[in-house]
Image 1 (tube, rainbow, N blue to C red):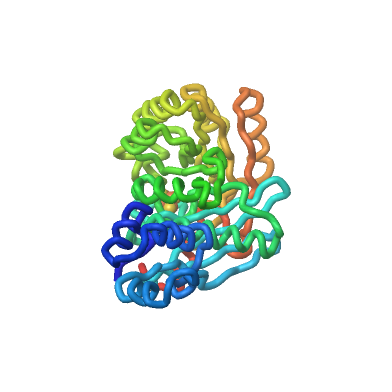
Image 2 (image 1 turned 90 degrees about the horizontal axis):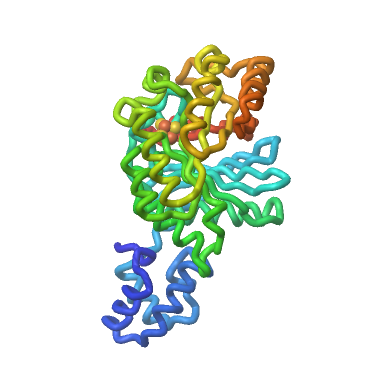
Length: 349
Ligand code: SF4
């Protein structure tokens, strides 16, 4: 079976022509697929039964489905999605008074093996198709409407996988999400977070993307970063900063550095000094993130005093930094914790 959602309007018109149908049916099908967000060809009620049957002999929609949801006491909802080939990915809805954020996945598993991340302990199985990425957003938007009577306001690619290693599907999904006949969301409300693939950061600049870019920094010198993020061995901080400046020059969009505080690893004043130096090299702001322990790694969260001292030091040095408290800790939905359910149930690793 082929995926009907992989046909754009022009391809749908060609298909209608081959089936001796009127060209306007292509627009109707497109509308069902992307505006009405149906789950089966059967539901396309303004097409004749004969046409629906013809389509169903060759095509399917391969929709991603919610397999399981967990509700945190802080209102975060973590979902396990099941794909048509029975693999799983996770996506999280994070409500705050100001925002309704969807944190979504771009790959099944991940090849980058970051030491603090649950997904990093899985193998990479496959890239998500662009429609599987869009499906996560649609499900989380429906969930936001159902439980909180609000629409999604923001999307972050900070779930499972490295988005820049699934470049074309991620960009195509964002194109759909921002399209007038999609969610019509502004690209400025979407953030793609990368572990740091310099070549692809430059490509984002060449493609003049309008969404935000975040770099998962987590250590501000190469020695420490090599220890926790093996990708740094081939994409050093110097190379990354050059690529980030290239991106900034092309898009005029400042970078967000994500920095998880690990006790006695990167939470000292000397670490803050190195972080400040990096921030001075590229127009940026910093999100300092509370660490959430995972069973596979031995990192710990610093105490409040240490965290406050780190934040204070950044502030004194006029770094635009905010402390992001963890959400959904009780359901393993916080940053770096996704994939725990998969480990228990999918047997992928
Ligand atoms: S932090 Fe991101 S890039 Fe690193 S292993 Fe986890 S999912 Fe992959």
